[in-house]
Image (cartoon, rainbow, N blue to C red; front, side, top):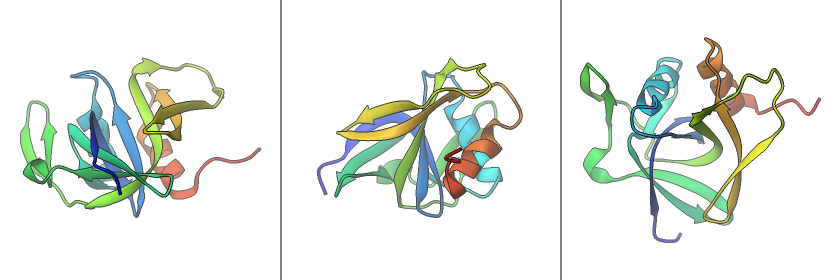
Length: 141
């Protein structure tokens, strides 16, 4: 495995399948991570994600200094159950929003890996939909 690259993002996983949550400061990365954790995901990293590639697969880990910690804005730094590493299978960009009912597939490319990319959806089903993608992926229909 190569030396990790760091990205200002958050990352949570369902089993070994992780979502990389990206966006500017204050965009809601930690808030979305907390929502997904409330649905059963485990924290990989909050604020700084270490990414590396192993056999063409993107792997997320956390720097040891912040492992097991997540910020809840206005509440404080919280302890969290973690997953030490996970395969990143999805990227979310909170800086962009979509209103399309069925958006065209998008791709996030980093470290030579292509990941499916979704933009923020301002609706209550957003976090549950991300969890469902982690669990079962998309329909081919």
